[in-house]
Amino acid sequence: MKSGRTLPVPKHLRDAHYQGAKEFGHGEGYQYSHDFEGGWVDQQYLPDERRYYEPVDRGFELEIRRRLEELRQRKAAEEGEKTE
Image (cartoon, rainbow, N blue to C red; front, side, top):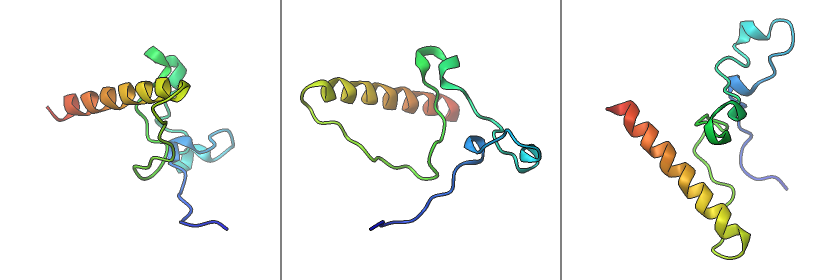
């Protein structure tokens, strides 16, 4: 059984490869993360702030946890620069 609600896909992630997609703004503003340093770009992938996965502090998940924290700190720093 599914619980919760279905969330709309942000416009920049919607298919832009068909005639008329540009009129709807599909794909507009999309940033390909592999074109950026570290293969990461601060881009919205879900309509709301959500966390579906939290790695634990053991095994390889500890390394994943550290990397996620590094990315979250980077995002917070970039947001701080935007407000100054």
